[in-house]
Image (cartoon, rainbow, N blue to C red; front, side, top):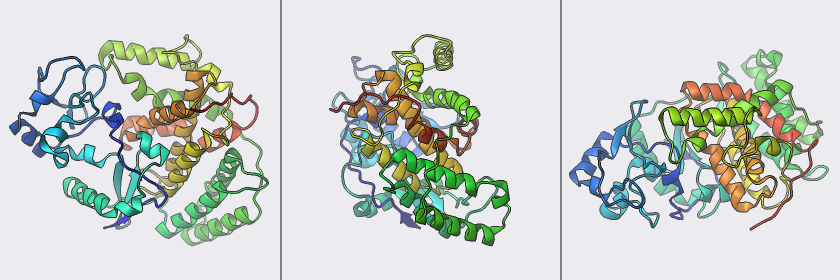
Length: 415
């Protein structure tokens, strides 16, 4: 199976240890667990940053999903992470002995149309900054990981869909992505990232109208190509549209997106965690005071000037990459695009809610990472389907574009 790589994505691991601190689970296979038990890996485990070496109970636990995972410390960090941001399994047994889950990060693989699509997680700060070697120069290493993933998972090909129940030809998807990229890069009359996202939203709205979806395969393809060419040849400047229901649902989407972030740290389960999430939910709906310094209402009243640094480069990269990796087969393409823009919109609100307008480069990167934690949820899970319903595709594109007006720009600073 050939690799489908994002030619503009760069990545070189900087050993920051951030992936070992995120909320998602570190899955291990039975074979990996047996190897670690044979090597007595529990002696390298730490129950807390200051505890003595050694695990009080098995470092490997079954989650409710049935997956075998590495147990986290009470602060949410992997118990094998050292103070020097090194994996102790790596230090003792070598890099090839780490769980395949860890070796793959920030990459994920999806089998689509006889090829393997490679995606990069924006829970990694280096990936958000687009820092390091081009993926094109790492095809052998990434291909080796993909082969090991295929042997471990034995995945079956996923069909492409435009919307649920509507198959999409891979060549037509390429044409759509080409149009989206050109619209994203338009400089007419001047460059505006939000205006260009509105242009994409207008086109997606047109391509998802019931009468267009009923055209049939050949006529739909012809319609997409004709209207796409027209949108590029005579780009409109659509007025910001902010659907009322979508704006209300976004509160729920914001809350759901921050569940992994709010679940990290000292409180991870039980009644205390439920109470903590309830406090966050009430705060987002204006029924409770600030949450861990977060002021959602203040963030909604402000807007980032997304076309200036330090905000532009990461925002543009996230949107560009979202378009390039459309077609994973995990969800219909319209949902993939909507969730990607929705995560960036959550990041904007999160940054402003945290800093009350005093955003900087480090804070923006952190907000993007925290907003993308939820992207690791199983697309087939009830939670993931609920997240899609809150996003109300393609409303996030309109909501992001509408932020260009109606609110004062937040002060900017850089680090």
